[in-house]
Image (cartoon, rainbow, N blue to C red; front, side, top):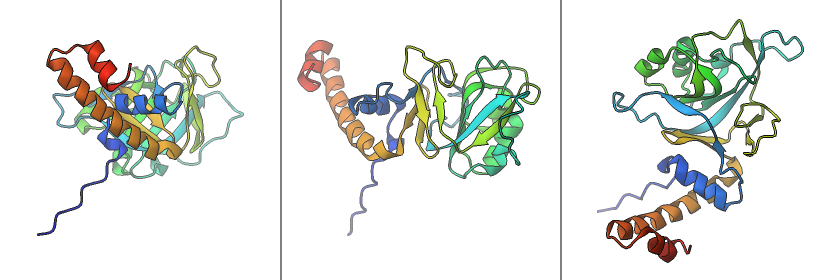
Length: 235
């Protein structure tokens, strides 16, 4: 009887924390972490879905509605989303309105998007949760998009800082998200993995998981955290 080949290990097998640890080891100073963004939908355990995202980025830049110099899109960005991608949106600094609502979730699901990550705010939380659509954002608002901001560009590099401001000089390094970079988002947060580092991240995350499993076994056996770390992590 033939034995089925084992499924290859992929980024989706790891948590955002495991992936950040791997990126730190590869010299990425922020570990790919996009800070201050949390899961708003779905809401376990009421939902049967975990809400985890692991997919390539489809990027969207918002600008103030009264910006007459930035380009204008000829179609709604949700209508042009790539199936199987996660939509990553950057709103202007200090934006208090939402840039994502229930109608957008319906459109994104119809086009095969797997979730949205927003450096900004969302609204219509009940609709996203009822749809089981993963929504990660900095916050939420009752205000809609049209009066305050508008989409200006898609599939462009985005620079996201803790404040959500392009080019800001915060103490925590900015994270660049290129179209097609891998976005991993779960209960712990959001991480961006550059396409060029995917294989190395999977390799290091696999090793890291094995080391942590050994540490956990010893710690549960009462051998102590310090001794376990020294034995398996070397420090």
